[in-house]
Every structure is written in C-alpha cells, then in structure tokens.
Length: 180
Length: 244
Image (spheres, each protein chain N blue to C red):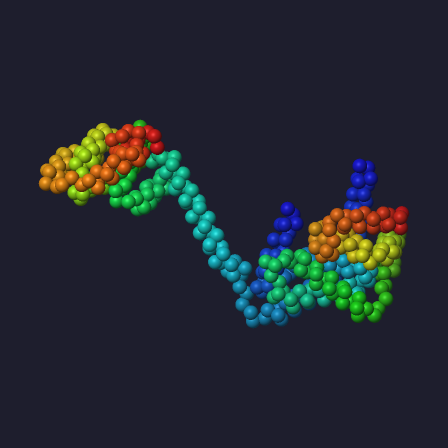
C-alpha cells in the first residue's frame, strides 16, 4: 500500500516537474539525492566520487525528464535506472582508486574519543562492504544505503524478491562475522 | 523465532548505523540543489508553466461529470422506487424520474402513468396534511397544481377521440374516483367535478357517431392482460395507492 502510494506520489511530482514546476523539481531532489548518494557511497566508498555521480544523475534527470511517461513506468524505478547506468559508466571510465572515505560529522583533526570511535566503525563498515562480492555489494547498497524496499530492488536488479531476501540474509551473516 | 527477531534487529541496527555514518554533506547538498535548480531554470526558461490540473482538465471534467451522472441517476432511481414523501430531500429526484418516464412513455401509456402520478400526489397531500408543518401549505399548493396537470394529461385522452367506448367509460370512472378522493384530500384547491362530468358526457355523445375501434379494443385487452387497467386495484398503473 505504502509502495503504491509512493509510486503515485512521485509519478505526480515528476509530471509536475515535466511541466516546468520548479517546486516539484526541488522536492524530487530533496527526497532522492540522499538515497542516491548513499547508494553511490555503498558502491564506491568514495565521498567525492559519490557527490559527482549524484550531481550527474540529477542533471541527467533534467535532461531526460521529457521522456518520462508515468503510463509506461514509475518515476522511482526510472530515476534509479539512471543512477545505475551512471554508475556503470563510472566504472567504465574509472581512473581513480577508491579512498574509502566515509562522511563523518565532526570529522575535524581535534575531534574527541567519540569521533575516533565513529571513524573506527566507519572503517569497519568500509572493510565489510569491500569484502562483499559485486553482486552482494549492489544489493547491500540498494537495501541498506539507499533504503529501497525489496519490490523496488527486484525491479532494478531483475531478481525475484525471494532471491533478494536470501542474498541479504547471506550478506548479513558475512557482515556479522566481519563487524563482530 | 529467536533467530528471526535477531536478524530483524540486526538489520535495523545496521541500517541506522549506515544512515548515521553515510550522510550526505550538507554543503554539498545545498550546492548540488542550487546547480540542479539553475539547470532546471535554463531548460524551462521561457516555457510557460502549465499546471498539472490544467493539462488533465478534460480527464477531470469527464470523471466529475460521470460521478455526477452516476450519483444523480442512483438518486433518481432510488427516489422513484422508494416513492419518497414530499418532505424528503430526495423528492425533486422523484419528480425528475416521473418527468423522464413520461417523456419516454408511448402515447398510449402516458395516461396510465399520469393516473399513477396523480394518485401519488394525493398520497403526498395526505401525508403533508397530517404533518403540522408551516411550509406544508405551500407544498400542498404545488402538489395540487401537479395533480391538476396530471389529471389534464389523463383527460386529454378523452378529448382526442381515438378511444373506444369501454376504455372511455373506464377512464371517466377512474377520473371520477380519483377526483373525489383528491377533493377530500385537498379541499382548498378542488378539481372541478362538474367540468370532468361534462367532458365525459360530451365525449360520450361524440362517441355514438364513431365506429368502435377494434384496434383500440385489442390494445385495451392487451393492457388488461399486462395489468395496466386503471380500474384494477392490483394493476401497476391504476388503483395501486399505498403500494409504491
């Protein structure tokens, strides 16, 4: 029900954006940019790269919004397809080595023990994500970083929801061992 | 069971840790949004913004019209079937239904329908007279006017001459009965009984010079079979007061 409501809501917002509604465009950016950024972070583990890719995705959205038709698909799937394709392009043209740099609030040189603890945790997560197979990393990013429901991931990855649940379960077990 | 709960909690914990530590930089977010909106302005510069609702106005109009049609249609059917009282808010729908039925009825059926509607008016006048409402008097006047109209419609059949003797006498008798009943129910706006009798007499004398129309006789017989005889208290047209 929630998925259906979300789908209708974002389809309508996208239609508004398509007709030149700036406020609708702003809403789309506010909702999707953190999710897409986290997805890229989960995949690249590199903050500057994730930021560049996120920005590219939204420029592409403006460029392609005219081709979006809510009758043939839903906007959430459409924008995630753009994000996925952008990531594929990035891997094709990849020159830089990932920096494993996670964004940590208050990450200044003079930070206290709490920040150090956070940094250790962030490094653990980077290590854990890096240890996953590309396929697992993809699902993991979409599920945990981008916060997408199984249904949406299933549409993007063309895997059944059952297969996705098994994969997430297997990934969890792997991560538990690493993060313990 | 325990494993399931553990897994669920683990997922929640992991998700919250990741969300907390993989946050989008606020400065980047502001910059990127500005760049996005600037690009948006460039692309849509000079293009008039057509609101979403205006692009779909025909769809909304069609849906609204359909909804109104369905609601009104249902109200009309319900008001007619339930034979709602004159004081009901659905009463205008009942009158609308009667108008539609009269428009759609054949010329042969019309007098029977009018007879039925005249009977309804008497019922409604009786109901209103029983109620001690200040607005009743005006409504009774309106109902009486409609009764006269319906009766005129019934008696028009007498005037057109194309009616056989048996049917004419039945029609006169039915009209006589209903007018008596009406005059009791609404003494303030009486129907002229003398005029009715005169019309019946005049036409009866005209009838003597006319050959009996066998086609009309057949039609009358058919109506009798179908239960549309006005004198038949169980028929669907006449004498069914209190049944609608």
